[in-house]
View 1: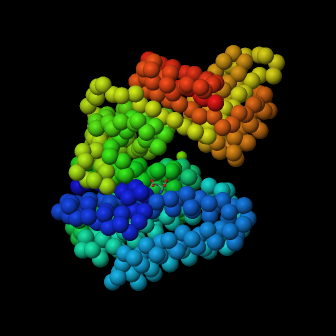
View 2: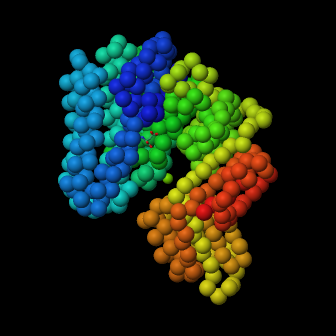
View 3: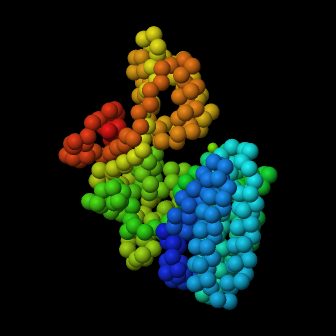
Length: 420
Ligand code: ASP
Ligand code: MG
């Protein structure tokens, strides 16, 4: 049994969806759980729908949602003949669910609405791809993962109820493999015990795939991407990025921790715990070797570069020049937990505490407000956080050329710099 995950870029056009069929045809004899992301930039588009809705701009929200609907219907029309009507009916049910919500007024928190709307992207894409594969003779069964993955109600960052989900995976998935070789479902989404939709954090489908792999003791998990393999940097930011064909879990965890967009940070653990190899393959050319990630040591890695933009530096200092000690810091960490803030970097000095965060205006405002009760708070925006693992002097100098370094943290392995 294998687990495949196809990301948004692999299904962002009619040709790409046909290409997915082409790849799966090759593996027809295997039992595979296939996880498919929302098409292309659908998740971002749906985020805009939620923003408009939450800002009270109902018509704007409905208009934006209409565009998402039309894109999906158009794709379905191009792809499907015999299966079109059934697929359209399924899509329309999902549309209605979202539109009902958009007609209401927001009374709950933003994150709740986010999950109810954004989860639709994966439902649309999987419905279309599943119908297309069946029409193309690649027999598969579509599943609503929200019937399988139960989570808590920490919207946008929901935690999987491992016990419930595992028993559901076994009771619902295993018997279905007797009927069909391909089970096709969504990643990134789940549901609470009250049937409210939840999401597991952006790029969460890699994680969903890993949880399936773990629970089903899969022989491997393959993530199909538009890159030839894992690279030492994002080629969009650094055109001279190079391919890495072999990595171990720990290195990938470190990369993800520092913000590399390769693989969702939570993805590795479920695989590592069961020693399941993770393979990254290129859907544009399946003959390329890709990258294999496993437990064995890997030597001679190139410098691995992660650049996070839109960073915010928050400096919190004592008002009377007294030390910012455990008491204050403990208090701040309680605030982080309460506000679901994950600092990308922290530094503690005598009379100040510095932290670097992603620019989430709502959270920063709340943090600044609560911290200003006992500390002076200063906020600096539009910074970038550069992390280099296995750094060399040359790489370091090249990357900081002409920039002001506001903060620097360094171990023999990793250097982090906050740049302006
Ligand atoms: N569609 C979601 C996102 O774009 C989840 C995923 O693709 O992994 O973040
Ligand atoms: Mg959580």
